[in-house]
Image (cartoon, rainbow, N blue to C red; front, side, top):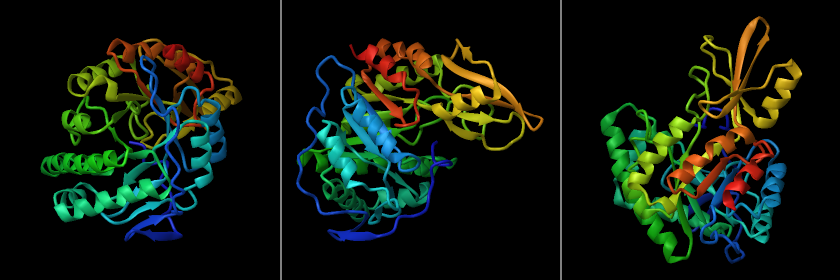
Length: 361
């Protein structure tokens, strides 16, 4: 769901760690996990992703500035190409940022994405030897930097119209997550999976019930209700969140669910067939002011938008801001879900932190 605009080149400068290719790795200092990584009872658990592109240092400062609210940061640093090759993107892995987040009392649980498609991943996941090798590779990433766990964000394998391939991924992924979580739990590390929402035909490659029984956290990507190659509209909505949470809480323990909110938007040219342009909240608001467009708020969905004309073409920009977050936050509370996520640090309206903080009190 979020591949088209963040994909960059492959990583270089790899070193071999325990027979597994891990780019950007340095010897672990053996540092303990971040203090305060587990939220206090009754308080909302909040995590956020740290991008590897753009103003990375600014995004890091954003995290540290809100350490009182964040219990976990997930640097979007690693990518799986095969069972052995789990590599850090070129220049992305920053031990200084890991150390700084730990000093701030924030757990660091890096995200790993994957490039193999459903067919290739199905073969890997159902081969016990290859699957065990992949668990070794992922565990090696965790120990390489003294991380507090790992977050699997395997989306490519889920994007298939082949029902047989999807079912094979569904069952094989449960086997992988079960083995990985058991390995990580033995060494006191956290096991997180990020999944697509299971509404309106999406997310069928993920067995929510079984993943929810294995992983410490199931993060649901609560964005791209309207996506870059579709028609303009809100990235999320109250009705959509209601559907997502009703289904998720029927199969996953509520204290293991995180619903991730968007901090960005899309700039569409309706009817053009072209991919919408990605905008952060900062970029969307700067654009709105520059073109003199009126701020509009869609009460039904709980999201802002505006329209403008450029080169004779009408544009529609839908995004999310603090007002929208406040409007939508009652939905997780209604379903007893305390876990909240943010995609991504540095993208968001600064006012969302006050909105989230109001929900945490």
